[in-house]
Amino acid sequence: MGIVSPGFAGRRRGGTDLPPGQYLTHEFPVLSAGPTPHILTDHWEFTVTTESGEKYKWDWAALMALPSEEITKDIHCVTRWSKLQTTWKGVSLDTLLADVETGADFAMAHSYGGYTTNVPLDDLLDGQSWIAYEYDGEPLDPEHGGPARLLVPHLYFWKSAKWVRGLVLSDTEDLGFWETAGYHEYGDPWKEQRYAGD
Image (cartoon, rainbow, N blue to C red):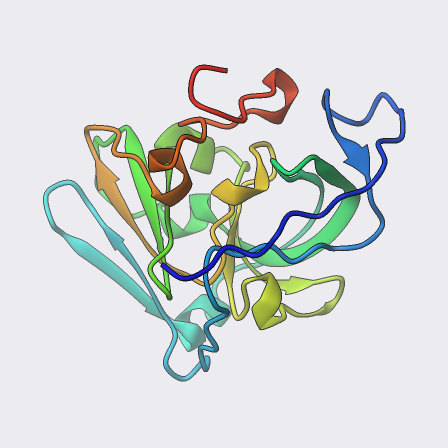
């Protein structure tokens, strides 16, 4: 992985909508572990690989043919900024995983560019996560993970892998890029699970 872009600094403003230790921003800071890949939708593919090695694949046209949802959620970055009522469009992981046969408990998200992050499979289901391809009514910019990113808004935003290209399902929890660097394996902003041991 390449260089890590610097964090975004600012003042915390109070409010009951913010998890502890967070401040409100109206900007959308760009933070990435490495350079921004630019993936053409003609070359984009999303793959789910089960614990038995079975693969399920969607190209861009197949993703666009699936039912989409408008999503409005607050997002919270581990660098302490929160942005409220963000609007997205995407395909629910419930839709993508509906026909996937698995008994796995965990998923590792893989991104174009090599980034990884681990998420319990239960946190990707029941209307909690999406493959998002629009933000604020426009196609998702590459700097924010376009053409498509994982969106898991109830966890710190490093779990919402940019430039997502697949999930690998597993019976065991392996750690992703930031988790192996000392970040929390789960990342609940309301419990301030920033670092391992929090």
